[in-house]
Amino acid sequence: MARHELLSPLPGTFYRRPSPEAPPFVAVGQTIAAGTVVGLVEVMKTFNEVQAETGGTVVEILVENEDAVEAGQALLIVEA
Amino acid sequence: MPTKLLVANRGEIAVRVIRAARELGIRTVAVHSTADRDGLAVRLADEAVEIGPAQATKSYLNAQALLDAAKSTGADAIHPGYGFLSENAAFAEAVTRAGLIFVGPSAEAIRRMGDKAAARAAAMSADVPTVPGSDGVVESVDEALRIAGTIGYPVMIKASAGGGGRGIRIARDAAELTQVMPVAQGEAQAAFGNGAVYLERFIGRARHVEVQILGDGHRVVHLFERDCSLQRRRQKVFEEAVSPALDEATRQRLCKSAVRLAEAVGYAGAGTLEYLYDADTAEFFFIEMNTRIQVEHPITEMITGVDLVREMLKIAGGNRLGLAQEDIVRRGHAIEVRLNAEDPDRNFAPNPGRIEGLTWPGGPGVRIDSMLYPGYAIPPFYDSLLAKLIVWDETRDAALNRLGRALDELRIDGVKTTASLHRRLVDDADVRAGRVDTNWLERWMQPTA
Image (spheres, each protein chain N blue to C red):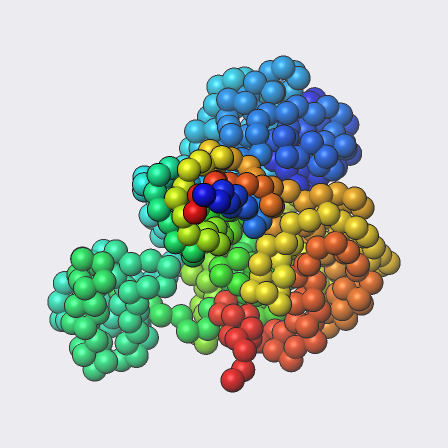
């Protein structure tokens, strides 16, 4: 099984949910496809979707909701 | 007068407030998040306190952290700047309750003028025109026709549950209203699950004009108006003082109405009353009041010579207004453009990064309000405003020429900014003629097919 790190394309604030009351975009154990939205990164008050580059199973989420992230920082680990 | 001022903000406005305080001999405390340790305000202030992590909700919006910082540094006043907690009545109250001076109006004034319905009611009782409309939901075509007859055509039929420009129909006359009213109700029901609609006068070519006022709780003066009609997604990008659209008689009526309303609520501090101006009928309508200093305040300072932030601090210190209305004389024309870290060629994508090189324009009539310095890394967590370029000259045309010249001198290397957009606007025929409305910029930016 190949482990793949999904990186933040931008610096900013990471959100695991589309809105505070909504369920998270993805959870550990969930199977995702390439293009699945896994979170949002807020950069200067604009929200950018983070999409998976490859499909697989989410095995670990490395950042908390509302964490500050750097561009290129690993957000979650996907196993395919 | 305060002796030590805590500036509860960041970026260019924190720098602006620190400058005003220093000139008055007031010591300054900058607060900052972990992401703003290298901020210019931190460097300029006498002291700095870290108040929390990068996210604004945990730092600049954390009222307790701000009050704790004021206590630990012995500050006796807090200036909220704009945005963040500047129009938060509970924060103003908490500051006052802690025995500190809030540099702004009372919590009561913030609450009253910050509530759209209450502000509209205050305007009506002060005989200040508001956008004519139905008082609440309109049920039938007959009722709509009767109300439209009094507010005047064209009218907008707006879904009560709509917003952001959705759920709006326009009727130009009674025949069209008769036809469109049931359609609008049906659409509102389908789109929002609520068929309730109300009527409002439709202003086809609206300009955004706003009046700057200063009050001391007893007396209010105006400092003329600003025109902020050039907007993108309801964000102002280019502002000027005074408005090129108003004649002197209309200007006087507009500014006097703002004074009347602010006096009616016993306003203390700096404030701005926002109006829509109908370029087709030459009518103005009050929409809301901002109970704080505004981003575009420097253009007012340029045409009047009054330092608004200094006046705010003096008023907050319990002084009566030192200015009479006749002392405030305007001269020339001023323009501000907002230099944002956004790429105009990529749909204004935000562009945080490091400032690799920086050349500010200079010479007569040019002012820069900014927190940039060479080597500064712009954090991605806050809004994209990097700098305000403000120019003044004797006439509007000369000011536009000066703006073009200043933009040609400006160099910001390392990040994309909106400077290129402004350079194109300077030479546009409609901008030159002052022939714009609040939708003009978005139309202008549409790619021509």
